[in-house]
Length: 401
Image (cartoon, rainbow, N blue to C red; front, top):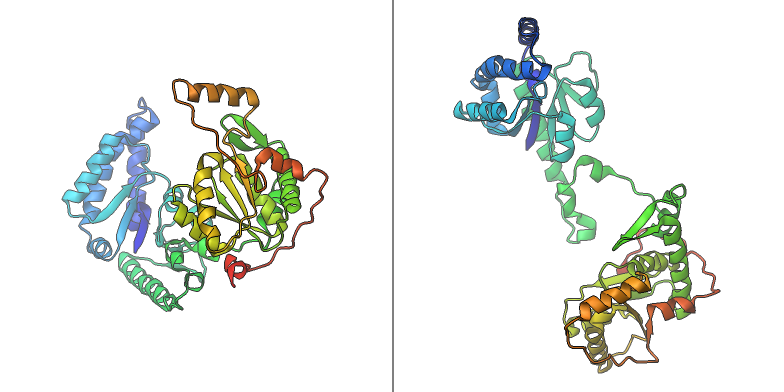
């Protein structure tokens, strides 16, 4: 269990006022110093002593043995690194079990680290963090059923122990497994509370692409080797790709297997198939032809997208498949340079082929294989209708015999 404690909350009002008064007197005596320099010198002279006294406090020792404690010293966040290291080493020498001493913003620290409990008296921090995280405060003005308050160090120790038990109890209650990852969702234990309770819109990714980018059509959606594609152009190409897949015969429930790397054509395909109610099944090009055959048989793909350099791999898989069952009726070949202007693609080809022995031309199956450019032309004049979103529709529904 990891907690972050604001230094303020470990000091009583009298100690805080004493520090403030001491700092004000120090500033008045050193008016020629820059504000940051003044803080650094004050920290070295006075903050070190405060921390020395703090770490020998019995409640702090108790807390440090029960939890992984991050001590947040945000007031002096502009101290130089040498003083920070000095204070950290000092606390370790005194036996403090703080896993970390943090000198920046408490909120930033919580947002970038998995923290279970925050002990703070900062109203802004409480407003920002709630309800994603458990909060303990000594601010008497805060009255909320979800926030624990305390007045002294012993009460803080008691409150932390109780909260710790409550959190552990809830975690144990949730760990009643049903034997299916889709139901048990074991990954949720690594999520912050906000991630566990997040509500996602019941819409397809095609719908979200259109809706979320209505006012952003001139913004850059893809940047492919310096070729920038706006959201407006992306949506236009998705529509053309959807028309081509419909003309090819792709329909709701079909699974299209892709043996590719990240190229713009794959992005167009993902959204286009989603519009048609079909599924994109991406497999690793580094697999063997035997493994590729198994992937094709599992989902019974009739349509395949393949990056040209991996054509032999997919062709061998289909030949192996022919001995058992034949599903693939059309193979779409993508070149890494399909989305690069012809001049750049030509220069790239010259550069890559210089001094390298030319490979023999690939012999394609004219009835089955089609290039991306030929494929896109198939959809000319074809209008497509969006398939309505179905909640909880999963790939296994399509794959069942």
